[in-house]
Length: 187
Image (tube, rainbow, N blue to C red):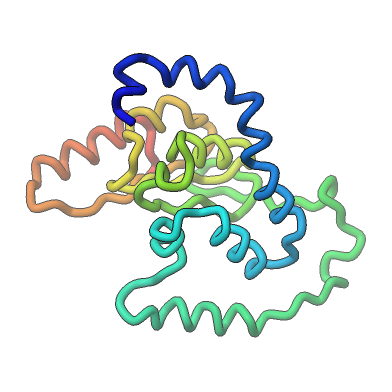
């Protein structure tokens, strides 16, 4: 695969993206359109994602006790649709303030390692989606995209955070924090 990059063929193949991408993504989009709940989304993701990558996202630490409890508690929720009666996407306002900045929804893209396992643009694609929805974005220390790259492309009007894993090298920790500050990370 490296020879493709050495010869510059990747730039040539990129020209076919507008034709090939819709064809490749059609089955996944059809599955996504049929999803009714989070479990349907999980099944669609499992079919689309490489087994190793899906296992990484779909699992928890150690014996997965916390993830089991989360699933159990989530299944206890019931939707009573009258709660949002009279509201529509045009009139419903879920905006709030996080780190002194306005966001459209009280959700965020949490820091997760290795986004390029799931998308060829990695964290840049996730950051773009977060920006489009007007929500906070979190970047992991183990990201496949740099603090600098996200800092440059993510809107300054929206909050972003950097998840720092503490390394034995205190100089590295300081440098990472300094870089995050430089590029406008809020925490």
